[in-house]
Length: 395
Image (cartoon, rainbow, N blue to C red):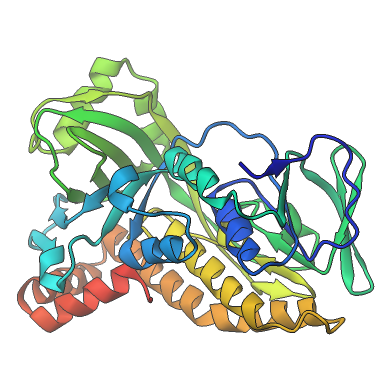
């Protein structure tokens, strides 16, 4: 494992401080360490991350290029098919559509990973990074001093570095202390997540049922296990989560249209409210944001962690080219990073927002647009190929 400091640190020649112990923070810290820069990673203890992430092939390639994943089949479940089912009761309904990775000439669209297993898999692969130090403390204060930032830790000790990476989630401490604002939208919907055991296995097929208040998605998790992500009105999901297990299973059985036989809960359900936000800038004055510190979306189209990994890939590319002998190198890098990330984040935000709004809309023209779009994707091969490329994200 990387070095873990438990005594008061006294680093004065650190190049980069990464704040945030989640997957985005781990990948950023390890990815930047490959450049040879001196990295401190602030990763305070946190509850186990029981979530899963569907990472598309370009995202898995990023992890492989950073030497953080070797063979994705060893720790993840390949996603070879995506089925979309319009389960609404609306007048105009879209046709059922099935997309297969073989159409795109690839073995899998991506892989479904358990977040905790993915993180645990990274640790043995980065032993060679002697320039990376992890500290299990949080940041309590952050002040700009000349060409560096000074961070006060939860034990009162202080660190300094020219470049600060905020990978500390939606309520980012780094973002809040660097004069970067966000545009926030809270949604009426929440998401209910849990693991299920199915009577009939998904066999690599992710199935997304579209209901009036959001999608009900089953993602293969190995064998007959499936990860459920159910988006619906927040009040409905909160009430559902409080029901006895057998009543929850009956509701999920109906929502899945009995396509996979009897469903049973393997884990308790967890409900979290949905919101969207994007930062005014992804970098500024020696501060860089990656992951949910800079952008967050509803779980539509599996874009969350995929976009975060593209943030890290861009950052690693820039750090390899920057001249760190210049006193203002961190300021220049943060500005360039923000410019380069803008297009990808805007287009992803627009795609997710359009999918979400057309799915929820009762407006007849919106339903017609969605139905026509699904017919086109189902029938026209070039459009289907383009949809594959957009959904998987840029390489």
